Amino acid sequence: MMRYIRMRTPAQPRLIRRGDGAVARPLLYVFFSQLPLHCQKFQLNTEMMSAYTNHTLMAKTGGLVMRWKAGKIRPMFVILLVLTLLGGAGCSDLPATEREREQEQDAMAPTDNRPREMPAAVAESNSSSARLKGQLPIRGIYVTSNVARSKRLEQLVELIERTELNAMVIDVNGSSSLITLPPSSPSPSNNSSAAFFRQTVKRLKNKRIYLIARIVTFKNPSLVKSMPAWALRSKGGSVWRDRGGEGWIDPYREETWAYPIALAREAIRIGFDEVQFDYVRFPENQVKVDREVSFHNPNNWSRDEAIKKFLRKAAAEVHRSGGKVSADVFGLIGTASTDMGIGQRWSTIAGEVDVISPMVYPSHYSSGIWGIRAPDLNAGAIVSHAMKDANRQNERLRQNGRRAAEIRPWLQSFTASWVHPHQAYGAAQVREQIRAASREGVHGYLLWNASSRYPNLGS
Image 1 (cartoon, rainbow, N blue to C red):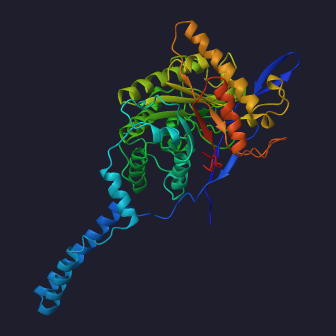
Image 2: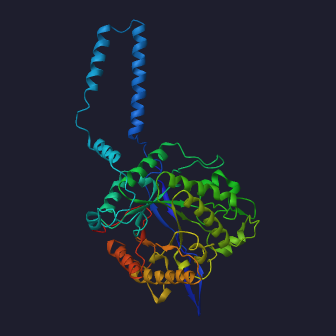
Image 3: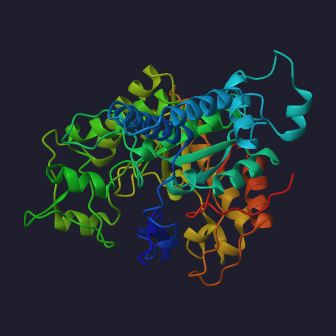
């Protein structure tokens, strides 16, 4: 049986000390997480089951009529059938199943779009003066699209209900996209997975969970496959692929921006509060990429200029649709003064989006940074230094009269067993990072685990 292995490579270039200076080089590892089967067993939702039942009933009763006309059914059989159906119609007072009661309550309950507060605050705050959506610190977890369509989603909802968590970041262009891929013009997808996904979004919103749609932007193998003309090309003319064998979309091509922007608008339309653009960058290792890739750059933009223009256009469209916009960046972007060769410069990105999310996973930093010899063993110290630097970046923007995005970091909720030395990351290590960020005035955060498995954070 083939299993689907999900790979994510958000690894930031590591800072390596050489002589009296420091240079960045790409991180030499990726982390793997085995996810549920890529092709899960088909699940009928209640609407699909209803349609199936109605279709079957029509076929069977139609057949009876034809057989009656042919004289093949006795009148007594028809009388018994009618009595049975009439008897069934009087069964509406039978006890509903737990699932039916839950669906009925969800349908009748008024929608409250405010994100959940901490459990104690929820119990105490029933007044109309409660803070509105988006004003609370957003504290979320990453949820794969497969997990969002599985029974394990309920465990994550329970985790949110008993902790200060109030948000989910959910893939919307993973194993199932909400819209059709080019060359078809973007339109809402009609496949069963997308339909089930929309129902899930509605149910989570009824539970007052703040929903963030994660869009993998320029590292998109599915889009490369459907539109190879949009892909980064090697100087030999073939589709260029990174070290993991994945194709990338060329960020310089403005025509490629239409798909992620249309996907973002659809996500907001079906109920997401925010869109998060991940992999909104060029491939890492600029020297190697420039040596191998022939870019299509008629406007002669710099890398960070192309990313800035994309985010400006995307943000305008998402804001027009009523949503917020966030962007993921390498953790060291908050420390660096350059775009690190990937087109991510703090000053340009933080000026275009509502929220900026540096990936400050302690395991992704090199020994010696900020004087810390074993970053993975010093989670709080790493996050503290990273947030100090990010705050300084934002302060410089404000001093120059420019807007600065809210900082909401990605924190590590996985064990980096490939790092030496390393430690197991459980609730204590996650809490250490949360406290460190909070001490620097950063109260919102997101927890990353590639398979969406999180420790019991307690109440």
